[in-house]
Length: 400
Image (cartoon, rainbow, N blue to C red; front, side, top):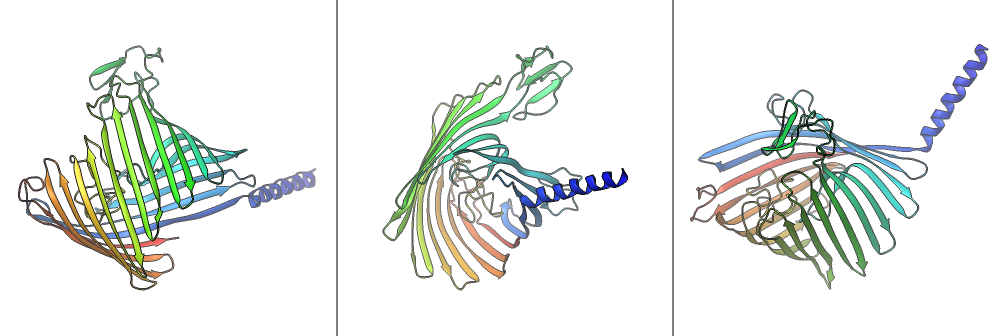
């Protein structure tokens, strides 16, 4: 009997090992350390600090093609003996950035979980959504339908938390922005004050050109009742040797008097190792671009620690123009430079002069150095100050 049990256990273990062997599990990620310095970003003062992080990605694929993906972020924040830990809990500073599954069902892929939400660096890029998504693809067309859960309150009389910074609970009464949501904890219907998103993305390839559009209806069931419709149309391709991108975006919200609109045109071309380009764009009536769009010092707040305006348009209606040049000095070294002029309503006119260099130390390791100056107009300046802002940073990055 004991031999039979041992044999059964051995067979079970072998089966488990075989099942695992049929799946693919891959690990990867990236890590960085940065040194940052800023001059006159605050009144008559300078700031210098260091930050670092490590990120681990896990991708698993079953024999049938279903996948699971997740990323873990660790020690992501400014150095301060653990006191400044960014988005993580102060005690452990480790959290899940995204985690979702993707299952092919015939010609459609179904994904669920905390997902990466990207459309364009101008409209929305590298966001995170609790999302259910259906994607259909063929040779030239992609169609995605998705549902986002942006806020969930099923029983606010017994739920503690925050929603838009004004969700409070006291005894059996819950209020949002001073408005009572529910006083009867047994009545879930009166407590269902959620925020949902319903969207579609269509991508169509036509020769060397790609046209894609997105439209999202935002359903707001809270007392704010601020429903919205947002969308963007992005076109990219080549006209001879010139690469072109054009995008126009709009956001219509019940709580806003005017529809927010923004857009840009980009053109670039290459001459051997050199690439030159220009961008012209605008934002109006409250539209703000994603914080992945911009240069070293204007916009691009998600990537550049020396930016003056983390999101183009966030400080007011903006008109901007950019000249950009990049040069590949060698297989290991690439350099770039920006000249930017931006006019921000009720704030200032800004001139940016900045440059950067990326040096490949080895496979998977690179050193980045960037810096520059932003000169505000004399009238108003930035925060009432017309001093030139200087910023620079060094980044050591590893990808694995």
